[in-house]
Structures are given as structure tokens and as C-alpha cells.
Amino acid sequence: MIDIDKYFTPDLKKARKRTKNETEHGSFELEHKFEKLGIGKTYKIQTYGCQGNEADSETMAGILNNMGYTKTDAETEADIILINTCAIRENAENRIWGELGRLKPLKRKNPDLILGLCGCMAQEEKVVNRILEKYEHVDLVFGTHNIHLLPQYIEQAYFNKERVIEVFSEEGSIVENLPKVRAHQFKAWVNIMFGCDEFCTYCIVPYTRGKERSRRPDEIIQEVKELVEAGYQEVTLLGQNVNAYGKDFKDLDYTLGDLLMDLDKLGMPRIRFTTSHPHDIDDKTILAFKVCQSVMPHLHLPVQSGSNAVLKKMNRHYTKEHYLDVIEKLKQAKPDIALTTDIIVAFPTETEADFLETLDLVNRVNFEGAYTFIFSKRAGTPAATFEDNIPEVEKKERLKRLNKVVNDGYLRASTKYVGKTIKVLVDGTSKHDDRILAGYSEHNKLVNFKGSKTLIGQIVDVKVTIARTWFLIGEAVE
Ligand code: SAH
Ligand code: SF4
Ligand code: F3S
Image (cartoon, rainbow, N blue to C red; front, side):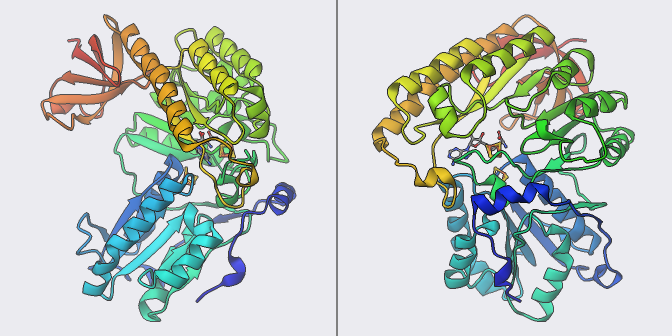
């Protein structure tokens, strides 16, 4: 089954019209005939990209488990391998092409293996065309809007022995009651909305994830209640632009701030949310940091650039001054709030003076961390047509200079915690030494300390003794 009509090409004009359409709501139910399809068979899911993809992979695992499949880490044994992809930058995509090449011999050894590609790359027409032409060993391609149809795609791939390629270009619906196998036993992702209507000129996400659409508050509250009952210690509310939560409700005046206030009453020890947009963040959300005990004192607030000219070209809808005002309000509401950000350097036409504005902003905000990127051209986005006039060496040089300032900020922030006793949710043992526990503080700092494995999954008081750039070292307080 190859459904060419459903392919998607990034088209700004078409995409912008979609916000007016009603969002369809549905509920997942596994058809009886699929329940035993996977008995005795195994699957492996490889996940790339953001937390949105991690949450989607948990759903795919949930669906496969309900079909009788079991998870395996051994790719040579797997009956199904799904590659959940990310399209955000060229190097993210190159990695996937390399991975698909690497997996080809597996298919030769096991012709019954179903090799599937899903996620954001699947939403791109150029990717689907390349798979059709050059990657015959890929049996299944589906996008971000039709994960709930996985059972029937697998059935078709098995029994009809033909390639199944179906990608919906529509704006996306909301499907509730999807099963999940959560990757973590005490930290959970909770989707609160899907899609993005910001249309930053460099970004592929509004095309790969569809229009902004929010889950109903009662569905989210119910999910978090169940997580509290199951002993979860932390939830992270997910969306590409969580500050737009609720804006699409026609019958409800309810925003992220309201949701945080309601979730705060449920007894979940830690609540985080990501990702925020500086243009949409409202006073009620800022207030939540002050009044909600469970809302953790860390905010990731991508700024992208400190230059107003560049921000305008990026279609970010705010200025450097507005961003600094938001930071000021946040610091007033929660003086110790830890702030992290995303920054793109060498956006087309960015001058040295523009770049210096970014460095200035980073210094003024005192970020405790940042993800930094060189601009990457994404086909079909407006910025792909902007003249890219910055030499390659200059791009790398700017990234290096920015990273130096960012890393100084990391270390400065870490040093602040030395001598303090902080609360750490213990994740597990350190990668290098299993007598050392590792976890995250309320401010989202990685902390290592000696302790018994019985503390895993608990929130422990730790006195910080040493600051390193990327993590803190401490001692458990008895
Ligand atoms: N929805 C989130 C995350 C988007 S992707 C948000 O708006 O913050 C994560 C980060 O990748 C972005 O914040 C941006 O810094 C970076 N990014 C997105 N598109 C990019 C591109 N074309 N080139 C380089 N970096 C990009
Ligand atoms: Fe991309 Fe901008 Fe939407 Fe973030 S807000 S996902 S950067 S378009
Ligand atoms: Fe990548 Fe898609 Fe997330 S492009 S960053 S996986 S929304």
C-alpha cells in the first residue's frame, strides 16, 4: 500500500490556514484480531530527537506489547525494528541514513524482519522518495499523525509482504487511551499538546508535527492522578510550545498556568514542563513557579538569538528587551530559578554585531546551561531561501566563542550550590561506578553521591561538596 496523496511537502501558506480547522478527537482500542499477532515475537525501537519522540516511542512500545510482542535489545533477534527519527537539523538526518545503511545486512539474514521508519523525517516528502528509490530494505514508513494505526500496518507488512508507506499530511488529531510502556519507573512524560503554529522561519517542526492542538484538561489530570497512584515522583509536561496550551479551546478559558495550578493539587512531588516560548509565556504560568510547590524551579526558555534583527528574521515575535523582561518577572516570582536556553548561531545574514548581542544576552541572563547549534537549512522552510552568506569557518568560530561563554555559565551556576543541601531524585547509579548514585536536583542539576541502591526512585537530601561544569558531587545527609 503506497499512498502518495498523503505525502507532505512543507508549504507555509497551506500550513498557516490549518489553525481554523476543528481538531478531531479519537480513542484507541486494539482490535481483537491484533491481540495475538506478536506472540513469540520481539521488537526494538530506536529513538532520536526530542522528548516528544521519546513519548511517542513509549506509545509504540505500548501498542506492540498489547499485540503480544516483547521488547528486545538484540537487533539480530528482533522481528520488528522501528527507527523513530528527528528532522530538526541536517546532521540528525544524516545519522539516520547511516543507521538505515548499517541495518541492511540484518534484513538479508532475516527476510521476515520488518524494518520501519517513523517520526519527523517520515513526514518529509524528500525522505519518503529517497526510501522508495534507494532503501528497498525499509518495509514500513509512517508519520507522526498515525502511530495509532501501527497494528494494521504491521499486519499488512507481515501478511501481504509488501511495503507499507502511509504518511498523513493533515494537521493531526488527538487520540486518547493509547497504551504506553514508560521508559522510566518514577519519571514520566505527559503530552499536554501536539504540534506548533509558531512557524519560526528556520524550523521544520510545524510541518512535521501539524497544527497546535491541546489535550483536554480532564484527560491530563486523570493521567497525572494515575501516575501519582503508581508512585511516580516526577512528570514533565510536553509540547513543542507549551505556553500555547489551551489557546485552541473554543469552549474553555484555560491555559498552562491553570493546568499547573490544578496539577499542583494532585500530590505529584515534581512537575516540569517543556518547551516554552518567550512570546507566549503568561503571568499565570510565571506565578505558578511562586505558588505551586510541585512546579520545579527550572525553566528552559529558548531565546535563539540576542539580536532583534535576527529574531525578526526568525519570526520569533519578541525582542531582546522583551525576553529580558520575561526573565526579570521570572526572577521576581522565583529568585533562585535556574534558566537554560537554546541558541542558533550563524542564522543567514547574522553579522558579528548581531552575534555580540547574543553573547551580551547570555551574560546578562546568567543561563545555567544552553544547547547551541549552527543554523541548518531545512528544505521547504522560509529560511532555506535566505542567502546563507557566512563562511563555514566563521560559523564554527562563533559556535566555539558562544560555547565558551555558555560553559563558564554552567560552572558559575554549579559553584552556587556548593555547601548547600539540595533535594535529589535518584535516577540510578553513575555510568562509571555503580557505588555512586546519580540523580537530578530541583534545579535540574545532575548530582553524584555515594549511597545505597535502595535510594533509587527516592528524593534524598544531598549536601553539595564539589562543583564541576556538568555536574555536582555531594554527600547524602542522614
Ligand atoms: N519547540 C521547541 C524545540 C524546537 S527544536 C522550541 O521551540 O523551543 C530545539 C531547538 O533546535 C530549537 O530551540 C532551536 O534552537 C534548534 N533548531 C531548530 N531548527 C533548527 C535549524 N534549522 N538549525 C539549527 N538549529 C535549529
Ligand atoms: Fe520550531 Fe519555533 Fe515551533 Fe519551537 S516554536 S517548534 S523552534 S517553530
Ligand atoms: Fe526532532 Fe521532530 Fe522533535 S524534528 S526535535 S523529533 S519534533
